Length: 110
Image (cartoon, rainbow, N blue to C red; front, side, top):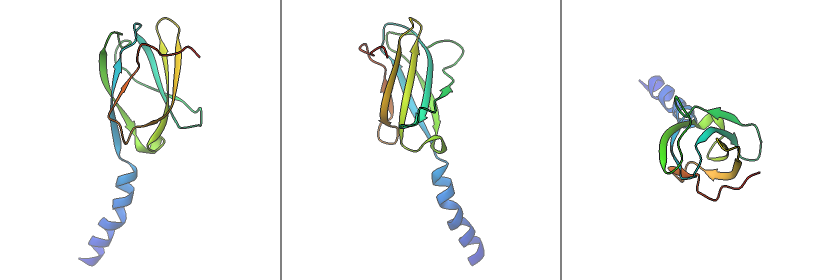
């Protein structure tokens, strides 16, 4: 019985590390969001996150995306590419603290 309990306790930290975070992504920009990529904060090692079958329309449409904890912990950088060609990088967003992200109308071109 003690061995089984030790196995469960030993596995608990591994389960916490593998936690998936869900983020509600709102596109408040006037243009459709063509792609959304995530990187561990400060690395520029972006990987694309699927937005669904088509770009996320602007004007307030939303979707929920899954972010694996193993993909970079709580603090992430986001890179958004819009259908009109604008690219916006948002650095240092804490996905453990905030459950939603809004692209906004003032997304600057980089």
